[in-house]
Length: 399
Image 1 (cartoon, rainbow, N blue to C red):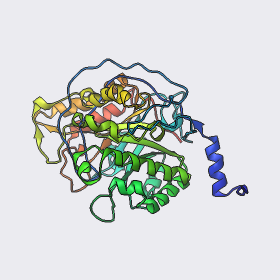
Image 2: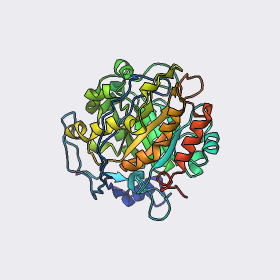
Image 3: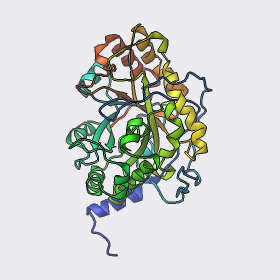
Image 4: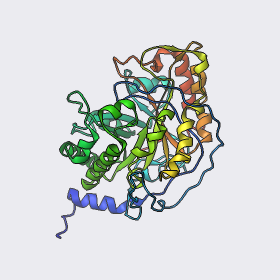
């Protein structure tokens, strides 16, 4: 086959792919989970997680991908196939830098999913810049990343792109079986080419929280989701978007654990694992009873534990880096409880170094969720202090 001319987009993609290294798996640990959340619109399956304790994790650093394991759908992962691990041009400082697949070698990525309050307003109130910014797109949208996302990336932030299985141009959902059958290939192909042209590594999630009851009702089965994920992954790879860092995100709600493994598309198709970390849920504006308070560790720990036990039995690689995809606290009768929850963040994360990224979630305009941080100055002060703690500032994005 004739080689593409030097300087062509195909040639540049080939050189970029050739330069990318095979993934170094991340770290090991032992415990975590949360509650649940939304699809960019609302909240589901809201119940508090269990309180069980777990030992502190130990850390290991494997140098290669795991051996092939059986995936939940019965097929063996193609672990022997070459998988590219995007390496960013931006790094941290000193020895604390970003490695392959955007994994910081120490500390955590500090992120936000902006809502009613603009990103720059939150950053000013919290006294530091976010490393990571979460953007939402529909399966029908073709301009990915958006102009605003590119602007923020140009200022030195990493993007987390979430492709929801619903058309943003209309109402309703896109069934996962339709995605897997190719109905949305045209839009997904344009998205993939946009991500490839962007060039920098980005976190990429297809339809976060597929394990909610609402999505089971409107979008399909766990097997449908896993097939749809693999279809989207293949489209992105085929169109040169090897800079996508695939991040599988579930609710982390213990009531969904029996079905969780069925949503896993396979180790070859996932780089990071994420889940939600909300202290209380339901977007009804209620004030919560004090007895329902859980510590920061207790909210993320149940799903962490599941990943290390039942997840391993289902073939999920326990060494992948973890992300708390969304975090926020409801209001309590005693306002000091939410303040305490944010204060606990640095110490809790330091005990679980496999958690490599955290993202604040703020409700969009018009959503009556009790998470808006700027409504509560004491919580703003607590999170600002947590974001300046030694552990959460070990990694600081530069470049």
